[in-house]
Structure formats: C-alpha cells, structure tokens
Amino acid sequence: MLLIVKVRKRTPKKKKRLIIALRKKRKKSFQNQMCVQRKTFAAEDWSLWSSDDKEKEMEIPVYLLRNVCFFCDKGGIKLLISCFQDSDPDILPLTLAHAMTTIMSNLKLWMNIGSLMQQLVQLRSCMVKYLCQVKDSHIRAVGHRNMFEFMWTAVKDPLDGHATFDKEGLDLAFKYFSSSTLTMRLAGISQINNHINVYNELCHSESLVEAESIGNSLANWLIENKIIECIFLVQICMSS
Image (cartoon, rainbow, N blue to C red; front, side, top):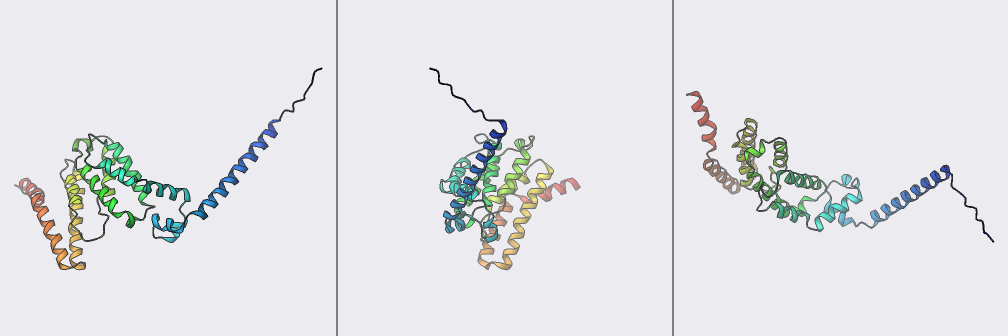
C-alpha cells in the first residue's frame, strides 16, 4: 500500500515574507542585546577610557568603547612599544609603522590620556627614535614622504604638558632640518622655532629655576648641533 504525501511548496512571496520576518527578529534581538550591554556597562568604565567631555561620552558607541577597553586591557600600547623599541626602517617597514601610528592616533580620540600617560610617553619616545633613523632617500620615495609627515605630526608635540626639555622632539626637528628637500628643511626650522617660542612662554609662566634649566638645555642643543652656523653660514657664503 503506497502512502502518498502531498508536499506543499512555498511560493516566492512566502519565502520573501519569511526572510523579512527573520531579519526583523534578528534586528530586534540585536537591539535588545545592545540595550542590555549598555545598562551593564559600569559608569566607572566610561570615565576610565573616554574623554572628559560628558556630551561626547554619550555619543560613543558601546562596542567601540568596549574594543578600546579590550585594546588597553590586553596591553595593546605595550605591544606597539615593543614593535618600535630598538627598531629601524630595515626591520620595521615604514608602511607598517605608518599603519600602527594611524591605529594609535584614532584610538587616542577615545582614551583618557591621563590614565595612560606613562605608556603613551614611552611610545612617543620609541616612535621618535625610529623616525630619526629613516634615511632621506626613503623619505623621497613615492608615498613615503606623506607617511613620514603623518607620523611626524602625530609625535612632534610632547604629550606631557609639564615644563620639560623635549630633546627627542628637537632631534626629530633636526632630522627634518638636515633633509636635502627645501620644504622639509623649512618645516624643521619652523619646529625648532616653536620650541624656542615655548621656552619664551615658560619664562613668563613657570618658575625661574625651571625656565633657566630648560633655556640652558635648549642653548646647549643649538650649539652642539650648530644650528646658527647652518642657517647663517650658508647665507654668508652665498652673499660672498
């Protein structure tokens, strides 16, 4: 005896309705999950990793903040330090160094810099030493100059606001000043002038002892690197 079963086939319209219903269900489940995670995210976590602007904090997506916290908790900054530490462009290609600098620059927008100041200062120091080892021929290569300038912009100013002598920043400015390209030399002179202007401002705001110490260090650096001779001796030779 044969048993005949009639199979009901779904029409294309029914399939389409089923897909739409499944999508709505997944979307609703995702929204509920987001709501629960936002409620369970502790207030101290927000204040620990986000900026001081309260209005800006409320605009931070919770998943972005969780990923930033994950990056910091798992020692992401320490890993970047280990990559740049005792490295040079032959070991760490400029393209890869630029990519890591881009990541760090984007993450810094969502970090509380004060809580990570020590690690960020150490990372800046390693990155400056790396950039000082980049050869002038590498900078002139197609595309490399833009990457170098981006990295220089990211690290040329010190993170710590306290009155200190930024020798590493000056060494990087001297790297620019020593370039064979005119625009880079002018950028180097401009950055050296910025350090001198910062010192002049410190003379009016900080204590006399700190300003005098920074001024002596700055003067010694200018003399040791023969900045005055490099600027004015060339003009004398050209005029004569």
